Image (cartoon, rainbow, N blue to C red; front, side, top):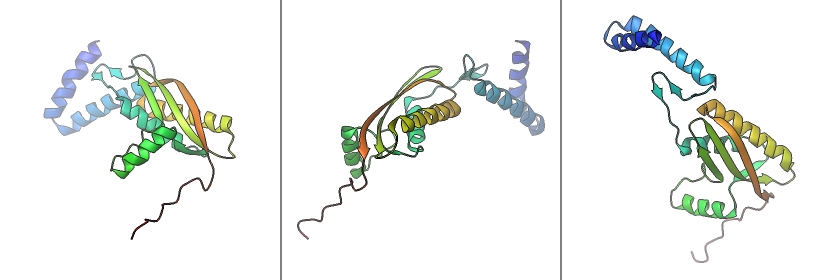
Length: 172
């Protein structure tokens, strides 16, 4: 406790004092904070200097990008979500990063639900496990939250040629 009391005035004094000693003090404070976050112990997003809260959108985007990194994942989202997403893209809304991902975020934990479209010919159990592992690795590494579960629903298979070609206008 004495160390915390000693560090707080020094950090504040370092900002208005000489830049050399202030840089050293704030650098060591950053190092202590970073190591506390990496430990994933109790109160991982809380330090003696404050708390960090994460919005659901942060975890959703990290999980979405992590799932798309896995070979064999064609797209995220169910049929309805993909249809709504394509309409949203036409009117200028970018829903692609959050489509097919639902999260629950607590103070230290997260639970993630994914809906996937997998390339035909890929092993669904293997791709699902690779997605689960990558999402856990990325979310825990980037956010510091502990991922309790990643539930995956495979909604569809993608066959090459499934894309509908743009129809030519009937009238020119």
